[in-house]
Amino acid sequence: MKASSDSENWVQSLRKLIKESLGANWQIKPIEGKTKLRIRLEDGSRIEKMLGINWSESEAEKILSTVEDIHQLTTKQKVPLEVAIVQVKKIRNKVQRLASTPSPKLLLNAWEKYENHKVNVEKDITQSTWNQEYGGKPNYGILPPRKKDQGKTYLQLKQVKASTANELLLRIAERFEYGTKNQYIRVQHIAAFLKWATSKESGFLLTEKDWSPPPKNYLKNYYGRESSQKPVKDSVQIVAIEDKDLLQLINSLPIDVDKDKKKHRLRDRAMEWDLAIKLSIVYGLKPSEVSHEYLEVKKNGKEFIWSSYSKKVGSHKTKQRRLWPLHPKWEKEWHLIKRIKNKAPLPRMKGVAAESFKNYLRFNVVWNRLKAQNDVSPYSFRHSYSKRAHQIYNLKASKVAAFLGHSITVHNSTYAQWITATKIKNNN
Image 1 (cartoon, one colour):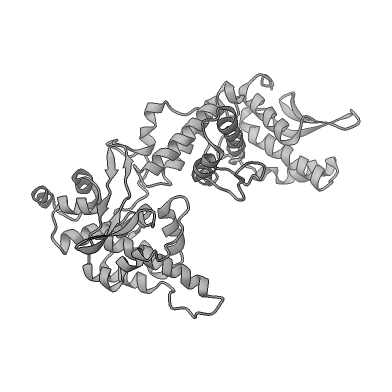
Image 2 (image 1 turned 90 degrees about the vertical axis):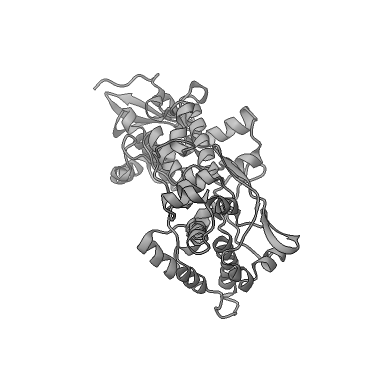
């Protein structure tokens, strides 16, 4: 088998990763189509061992993982080199091939280098902004430090598996509500990262063949905007929840647990989510609106809650607005105006707000029953509001759209699915 040229991009990328991670004394080279590990010792002597892995681009991840595992065993656990190689070979088959379903290690290693490029080389992003919007694994050597895995884009990137740029962008996009600003930003971040990581500027950390992103004007096919077709499955189910089920869900929250020291945190958390869910139900809020950052009490004759939330996605924009309760009796019985006025605690929602709702409710018996029956989502509270507005209060589409803070076009295409076409036309 003819060995690949040392000048090939994947070889440069792999050697650079090994050098930066393990030091210049750890090297790899091809011998008759196979990979040989060369280790230079402190006394200047060298040890060379065949790894039994093909010297090819499709085996790059296996080569990297094998060398790293051997390094770990010999330097950290003081295992003799011969023994370390045998041990690693035994578990090597568990490592997935780069060309099929690769480990995210290559991507995440490249992501670390991208952080240095953006923050310290280009200097177009501050460290604080990077930590919050992009992020990475814990790193105490920076200011401000990251004490845990952090960053809106990184937390998504570390959870997906992909073998091509197209697959990676699809997997990232489908983790968000279709057409939202959050989806748009994460797709843009990943595309910019891939463009840099497959360039000469990065030293070809990722192979151009598999990881070059599509042209910028093609990215809208991943995050939606005004595309007539959705290449990414819409993660937000257009499902409403009936009033009786909403009440059962609220009553199922553990706010009445014994007030002993061991359970007070459980109760406090339940009280926070009790308020968050009730606000979503009564006012048809988006998950990301459920925050004291956006909600305040105003007065015009009588007190009401105002949402200052205003986000633009593509040509669509959620507007600031007065919130109108449906049903008004729920607003009164649940003391929602008073609780917002007094800044009653709301849950801290990190990253995507809808995911925070899902994480809290994932063990709730009522919620799981509703999911099994009709695959509800946190946006179902908003859809329930729209259904209630049309089928119980007989409100016009234009009014309900204003209540929800979006255009009639958006409303008629999504939230008003419970109205017949004739009613939509008449209600505008």
